[in-house]
Length: 359
Image 1 (cartoon, rainbow, N blue to C red):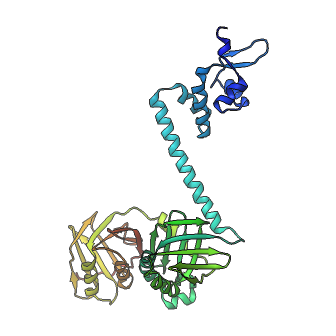
Image 2: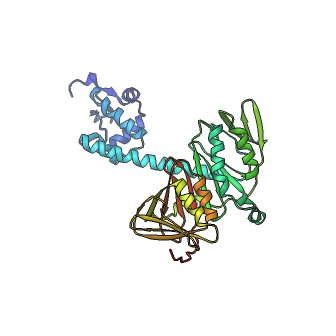
Image 3: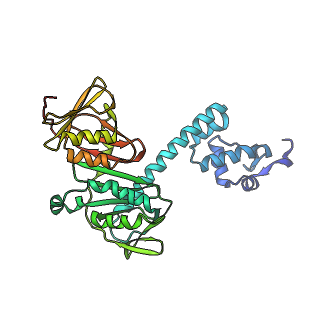
């Protein structure tokens, strides 16, 4: 064997490349990183300086969680094969991490016993706007007497998002906010809408507010003042399941929000109002003789769908900007009402049984 003086013992090579000797023996057995020379008499392994690059790359691949079967392709395959394999592994790692984070956050929220701790910071006007948008979706006073939770707004605090959710079983309103700061555990808070509206009026004048959750309770801080927040121990409906199970939209109506609202108001409140699309035209009608045709862009096959105006109008009023988008899957499934100017706010409105009109 020539140039044996340039070879390193397994211990010296291991220290040089940041691997344990046991790992080097394992990689030898797996035919991933064979030593440059093995003494037949002693069985000692020796490594050459030119093997450092392969050894370091092997270590980095293992640190990234790449299986040895794939590591061999990356070490000995083409550049194109290596890139495709690494990109596929990166996608899988992101999906696994997101799934794990979601599962952990769910467990933390539902963990019995103990006290959650969290601090989240939001814009005061932004929080007030979110309350204004979701509050109309809470249940009426008579319904709240039987189902107190439907008189509450759910506030979900998480690292990436803060969500405000309200529903009366016929409407579902969700507003997503992006916190500027988050520390602690994911939390779910249920707050009665009158108290939350009061808090929103206070927060609207502040540049920033912080929501603090600890063993003493929940409070909001801003501009040197603090407001305690009373929370309820109730089970809020599983709104996420509703959103996840929404079918794809087959019909879309894009209309001037003010014009559509005026057409619905003009049609009257004596029973349901009907929206009908035909030949790219939108017709709004009621049981009476009034029929309106506000300007709209209609896509998909013709559709006829009925709403309680007392449910649809607040959903239109809660939007932002001049345009409104209605996404319809069928005349019997929830309709998604969105604003073109604010993708972070979504309302679901249940249609009602259609009543034929003469329009």
